[in-house]
Length: 266
Image (cartoon, one colour):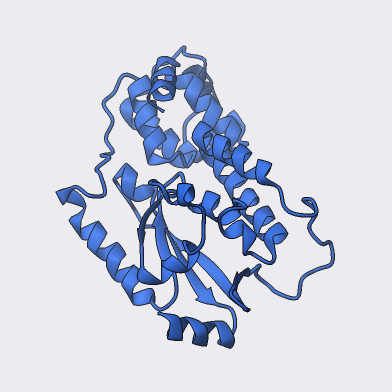
């Protein structure tokens, strides 16, 4: 990742901004109208004829919805110091964030919940999340545990998910949108790895509309089939790179039988 970042910094800030604009499928006119500058100015910034101020880099990045990590890269490419901190989740400065996360996870018991970073590596879980680590290959539990790899790998939950084709399609679709949004090469590598796993019987998903309004995770445990729905939450108005990339994934029982079973189990 360090090498990738260094290569990014060596590229002109205008070239990087043009890449983000094209990724967002905006014309120079669209972006100029949003930022309230002339199209000529946007064009000059992108082709290097005009050096944008620090404030202009941040304004353009805000309207292009550039992640905080990449905003720092834009500032460095423009010759400015980065303004967004990147503290370790285990540093003293992040104590309030850690305590908030742990309260949220604990309050969600007896249902599973976990916190992942930008690359879907698990950084915190509650006690009920061990539902997902039972009877999986030891190598999948080596730190950092990747939630998506754990889900789809044949030696992970992939062997116990009874609607694997639907879950795989939904997971890959979510990851693809994230790659489109961030252009992160590490996420692309993860996508390629997960896609290579495939599913028994092929990748086709039934074309008949499912009765559910949301695709549940149907997980076999012994002679039972548990049905879970999932939601993902993020922190609002983050100013730290680490915090901005945290995602809180909470699982809810999709039926009464699953709810009662989890209450007894945890």
